[in-house]
Length: 145
Image (cartoon, rainbow, N blue to C red; front, top):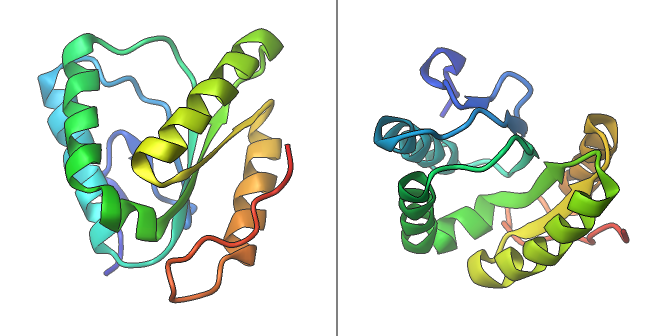
């Protein structure tokens, strides 16, 4: 299945298998859009990595909708989304994100990493994609931080 970038508003799929996101999920409509886009990413059937530009906090209802989707789609997401790489330039916030990333990895089965820059994030993403065995959905070697 080919991803039509015109149907994506919160995820940038132009560089697939690198999927950039960072658009804030501000309300219920954005949360539904996020869910539809995640459904499309999983349905396309090829491994990918999400790179997330950290940008503020999201409202409780949006976070709740995202958590619900993640809970109900944990297995297919873990098979295709090889990692979530957060981009955070601030070293103190980056350290806090690394602690949260470890919890997310256990909860959702998706590897998580934190990078200081978009370039470092892409390097991590490509390493994960190249190390993952093709067509198996299994995770490859994860780079040391």
